[in-house]
Amino acid sequence: MSWIEISLNTNHEAVDWVCTLLANEISQDDFQIGKYVGDAEQSRENWAFTILIYLPHDSQIHQKVEAIATILKPLHRTNLTSELQTFVLDSKPALKNDFSQVRHIGDRFVIVKDDLDYAPSHDQEIILHLKNSLAFGSGLHPATILSMQLLERHVQPASQALDLGSGSGLLSLAIAKLGAMVLAIDNDPVAVAATEDAVQRNQVAELVKVQLASLGSASQLGHWMGGEGVGQVTAIAAAGQFDLIAANIFARVHISLAVEFAAALRANSGILITAGYTCDRADDVVAAMVAVGLCECDRLQLDEWVAIAFCLLKK
Image 1 (cartoon, rainbow, N blue to C red):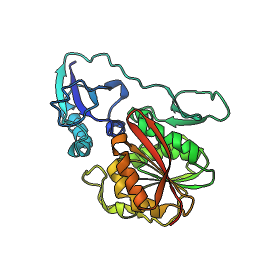
Image 2 (image 1 turned 30 degrees about the horizontal axis):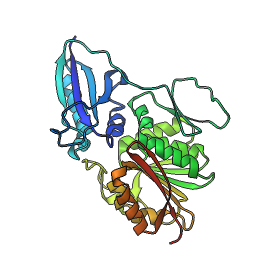
Image 3 (image 1 turned 30 degrees about the vertical axis):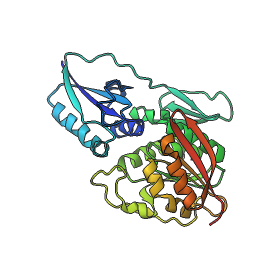
Image 4 (image 1 turned 90 degrees about the horizontal axis):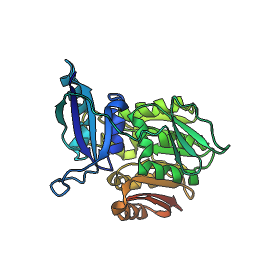
């Protein structure tokens, strides 16, 4: 049987979302992430990765390729991925991926694939189980790693937290395992389903409420990637009710939501953890937050990625 190779390029900002969006469509055995090796000077975009997908060349292949293209259309529409390229191969090549079984993050978090029997190495370890799929890769992204390290520093037990843009649900799990109550919201139904699955697998449903929603006026903006079909989602009022907000989203979304973040934090004690952007956008994010009364109180960096925590001192 021959095989179809589907290739596309993406950047650091979107590779995590490609994995999440395709997690229910593609087996990790048919998927490979590699460094982009094309001609950067000829590329209009700053590609960092080339993703290869392999499918049997059967009678359903055209429908399968079209389904993948439809899923990734919002990312392509916003220039976060290249167009899909397809090639016919005589056989499927051997794939090399680093889908590690266990990932340690910070001093306490351990991300474990769901079918692995893992024994904690010390009493303080916090184990987070993820479904065996491409979405497991979301725990490897630098922005997620930095977010979890800041959460470990700043989450207080019995506090009220918001995870805005919950994605695969990892940050919601981390917050809940640290003892806080979490409202996990996303305006993408795929992400909401992934978060719900993660919450059930980790038995924290009593601590995490998952909802298709956004914060304040952002609910009127539709899909954050500019996709079609999502429409207006539920608006969560920004009413000073959260002790902590975690948002691992694009820099432009942080900036547009600065007013809503400040209004949603509890007076004199609220903490906002921002991630999902690189160092070249950090000054823009800081300026937007300072303008609404927030001040930087913590920062971590990994390669070109940065995560910054802000404190709301007074309203």
